[in-house]
Image 1: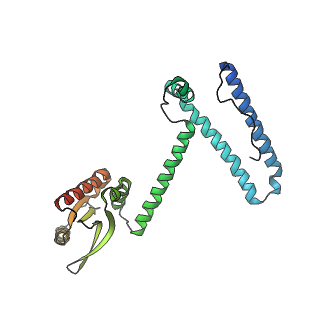
Image 2: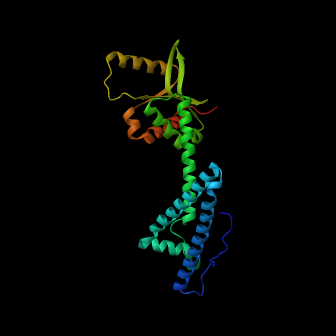
Image 3: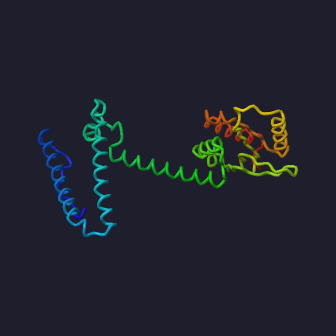
Length: 254
């Protein structure tokens, strides 16, 4: 808006009756509306003379104002229950009453929601980059990695998870779903995404031979089924974290 609205509401209404306070708030809101309508009228009258960019900006500006007004109106409805009414009274007059608010004030609540959205967006971007960089196409492996990153196991335990790591063992290349990289331990994680399909004897024998080769290389091998990951990824990740702690107790860091 081009000008600053000069109407001010007293910070407290000591000495006013309830009716006077409500009427004063009504006068304030009416003046706000008049001020905005005057500016909207000015924007309408000059719109055709502006560049396309400025016209689109004005359209976005006033649409955003409507969105914000509706959001505020709808947010106020949460105070219409008995507990909501009490909470609002405590928010506004808690200092005088010596009572703490039961929830965040609306503007703080909205800012908290903004921070949560920022964190969520950052997490989503980082996970997608991680998945794309390592070409992880298996949904169960993606879920495992998301839960691992969300719990911050790397930072908590001082390790680094390495997805889709290729090892050469006995001259044969093996691609491992996840390797836990740390100077003091060697841990490999395999996730079977086809646990609902019965394996042939040959496939089962190959899997066992593969596992023996990985273990002979000095790795502790943990295997999860796809259904375990889908059902409770946090439990699987925590199980790996506990295994890391157990390995470190058996082999202290030098």
